[in-house]
Amino acid sequence: MITGFDYYIFMIPAFILAGLATLFTKTTFNKYSHHESMSGLTGSEAARKMLNFKGVRDVRIEEVNGFLSDHYDPISRTLRLSPGVYNSGSLSAIGVACHEAGHALQHATGYIPLTLRSALVPAVQIGTYAPYILIALGAALNNFGLIKLGILLFGLVVLFSLVTLPVEWNATSRAKQLMVTAGIVSSNEQVMAGKVLNAAFMTYVAAAFSALLTLLYYLLKAGLIGRRDD
Image 1 (tube, rainbow, N blue to C red):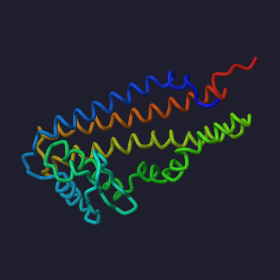
Image 2 (image 1 turned 45 degrees about the horizontal axis):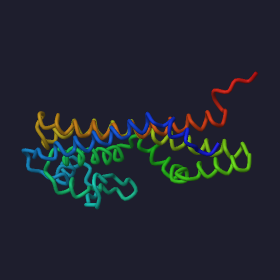
Image 3 (image 1 turned 45 degrees about the vertical axis):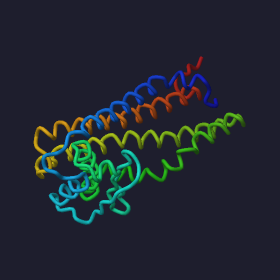
């Protein structure tokens, strides 16, 4: 049951959704990157102001290479922003920066889904390649136990993708609220910055859908579901 051409046919809906989500995110980000915030704050300054507003002062903010490579590292308590976000005062940059600051606030308040996602990271790192290797070996050796183990490991990848959804949505919700209450943007500007965050969230929805569909494919191929016993 090594992945064959039928896998790509099966995954067409996921490929389409992922492509549309990525395109929507980039076009929305680019659109509002031409709208400067009236506050004059850059992305890094906006993130710092949001964190200070909530009394979180032990998080570092630094610049990292890449396009939309922004992320929060809970291990080092560091918020890393891409150049286009760190140095820019656009509504797109401020929205993304405040979203990442939202993750830092989740960490500071012990937000349970974030804790669960962080706990799953080691398993997911192993699960990046191990499931496919085990499934391929199981198919080659006609060892159904290896196939089931590979599918089980991939299930952790799916779980990680699903747990990511509330984590990302909560960070977006925090950003939308605090951008205004902390005096970073106006209510009208928040609507525009929020559109960038909503678009970005769709990429996580697409990733979760793709993971679920892949798991379903392997379950069907292994006969673990959909098989009728006569």
